[in-house]
Image (cartoon, rainbow, N blue to C red; front, side, top):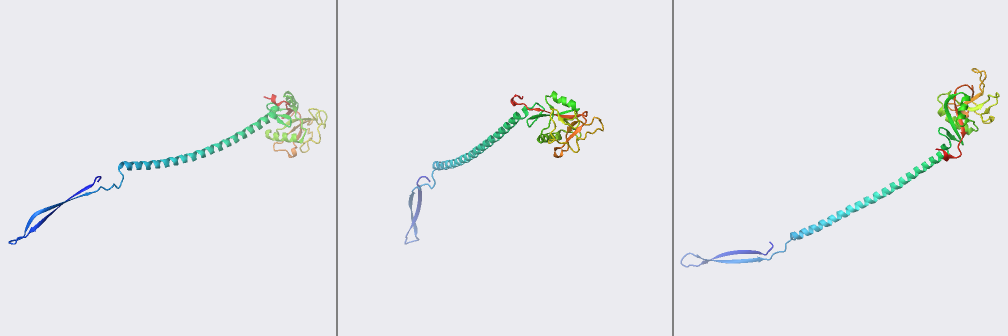
Length: 265
C-alpha cells in the first residue's frame, strides 16, 4: 500500500444477569470497536521511474564499455594493418629497385656488347661473329663474308677458339655439319695462311688427330681449306680439319665491333 493501512475491528460482549427466581438470562449486547491506523512503510523497491533511471544508467555504462572495447580492437587492427602495409611497401620498393638494377645491367650489356654488332652477329672479345647457315664452298663462303662487311674468321687465341667451339656445338645439326674458317694453303702446300695474309702461328693451332693430312682420295688437288666443329665436343678444343675446298659447308664470318655503341639502333 502507498498510504497508511486502516484496520477495523468490532467485538461484541453479552453479560449475564442473575435471576434468583429462575434461570440466568443474557443481558443486552455490548459492542466495542477498535480502530488501528498503521503507518505506511517505505517501499522496499524504488518506483518505476527510479528503476528505469537506474536501469538506463547501467545500460549506458555497459554500452560504453562495449563501445570502448570495440574501439580498442579496431585500433589494434588498424595498427597491425598499417604495419603490414608499411612492410609490404618496403618490400615492393626493394623489388622495384632490384628490377631497376637488372634493367640497368641488361641495358648496359646491350649498349656495350650487342649494339656494337649488327643484327644477327654475336659479340665476343671485341669482335662480331656471324655463323652463316648457308652451305657453300670455301671461296663462295669467303665472298659471303666480304659482302657482309667482314671476312672468314681468323682465330688468334685459345680463348677465341673456346668460344667458337662452344657455339658450334649448339649450331651443328650432325657430325659432318662443319664450318669453314679463314685458313688455307692453296697458294703453297703446307704453308698455312689466314685470309688477312697473316701466317698461322704454330703455337695457336687446333688440328684434330693426324690433321692436316691433305687426303687426295676424291680430289687430286688435295685438301687446302680448313673447317672446324665437333658436335659431341672437342677434346682440348682440337677440331680443325683440312678439307677439299669445293665441299659445301657453313661458315664463320667475323669483323671488328663498332666503336660508337650509341649509334646502334
